[in-house]
Length: 395
Image (cartoon, rainbow, N blue to C red):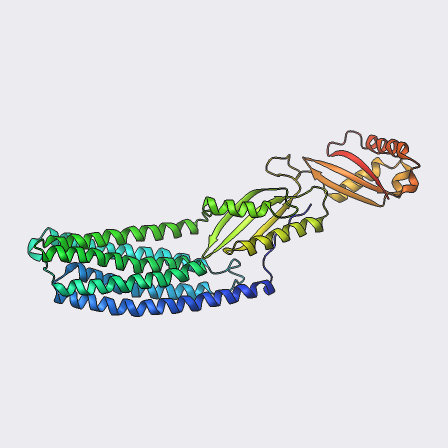
């Protein structure tokens, strides 16, 4: 039984190309809208942060403006990730998004470090502490509402297109909303006579940004080193494969991510005596069903086995067909009926070769004669170390 390793044909890829283009257009639209909001809020926070003497609001404004840089990174990565597979990138360009997400995490970590350093410096120098006014509260409140709205808008697109980089950008927006909540707490406390709360709030913002940076970066690094999908998703894929017609069992199921898509490699086991074409058909049917039923799965590499090659005795050292036929010709030279063999089928199973011979009905008169003839063929093979048994079929 042969194996089949199949990629999408150019005709099959067209719907995926359309999907990539649609995904890019949606990413462009969502990110540009977010950029306008980031620019407006960033400038407003910094201006009113200085006017209202709020260190936390200024830090929050810098955070908002840093979103512009990451928005540009998102657009650049999305544009390249939308390109179709080519000779140098046969699996596509999805990991441009993954690399960009790692970069986004690094940017966020750098922003967090700068904010925390400045805030701690002010905490240890009380004369540098600022005393924010009421406008800091107003601007922070507007930021909470607008950035939370952008988060939900972006996350909706991220879920629809299974885009980690859009998901990262959505969380980047939500960190702005949450950091503004912290700003409100800090500013309100400072206005109540506790000036150090504003600086502490800035440290809180920095720690939150650092946590998000770690989560985004670590997830993307795991994708770059081909970490498998989560256990629940792998089990869903396993069940879908086992439910396919003609699949007895499976082994060596491997999964990995490529941007927003999932790639699957699997060995399926079929009935050992199936023809090559039927085994291939079982594999293709299973592959197409998996892609249809699990949207994130974009490609499946199927290896068709007749037995579990992880557990069964290896057959790789056994001779190929032309060598086996030469041996059989020598073994059967004294059997007249061997000249009437119409077809020889070889099955490589459990470290041995099982031979099926197809003969015309005329060579045997009844069942007893057929059994005697079977024993003659088997005896002629003798103690050949590679051939397990001979089986005769008549037509």
